[in-house]
Length: 205
Image 1 (spheres, helix red, strand yellow):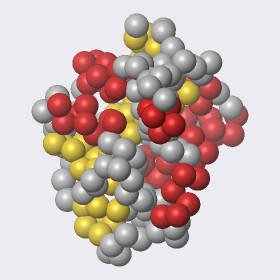
Image 2 (cartoon, helix red, strand yellow):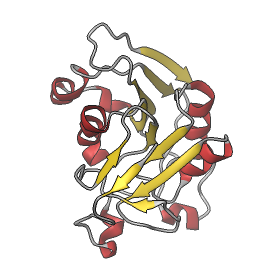
Image 3 (cartoon, one colour):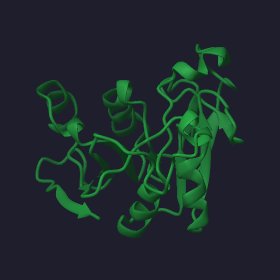
Image 4 (spheres, one colour):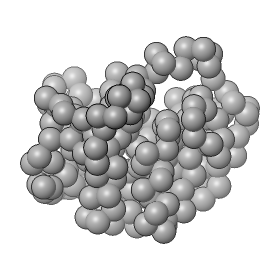
């Protein structure tokens, strides 16, 4: 995979506002189980919203080659600073890599459309609350055009967490206690955009 930056560090969000970027970290258990179950169809992964590298670290442990970017750099060394929503700021070799990330939920639908319609990876896995499967607006804009190949739902709750939770020592492998049900929403570049695509639902313990 090749990512070419046209404007290094292209972003309109100042570093001083980094706590306002919907930044929550992903439980390590979520990435471990995804690696066990899903075929990325590529050994090269782009994590475009890497945060503090919780997903990246687990992917690397499994032997995958990972390119980590985000709109700001926090306490984890990135390969580059990239505004993923500014598609004029980077170029990629389409279909040669997978995307795995926990996107900001406020912009999850925009992220999905940007990825499937413009970036076009080989596969894409997004860690999202299960509620993101519903909603007529989201269906009309996204799922009616791009059907997921697989949905992995956790039977036992996981919880994303803030840095304050880490400092308080309350974070385990499954994150923190949460009332939110999470899933991996997975797309296959060979099938999205095809109306006959069947979505496979799988429960993860």
